[in-house]
Length: 124
Image 1 (cartoon, one colour):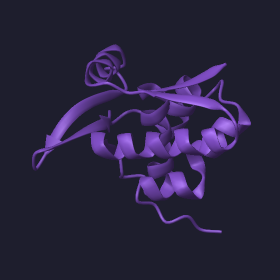
Image 2: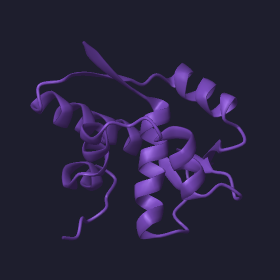
Image 3: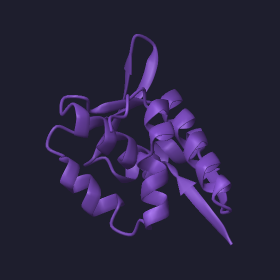
Image 4: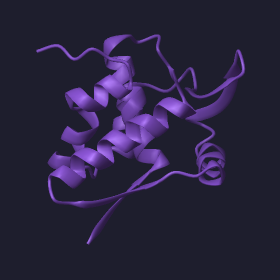
């Protein structure tokens, strides 16, 4: 059986982890999302799971369109980011996107290696 990791899992998890450390950090670059997803897949594969990262430009734009009340795509200095809308909270993200996460998936998204891909230094 395969576990598909999609843009919705990546974006919500990345923003939750970033905002837990700094509430004003409400955006994540598309390149960082790709790096983060690759680490998550690698961690799940190490655990013996068949994980596949489902991340395409088209799917990313569809996702942002479908969840426009949560996210927008913005560009700063030529770098594209997915940015959280002002009125959306961490709790909103958890309720909408993380409610069906398994423990192993949650650990993969919030582990030390994954946080490093987000440029977050994990503390003990």
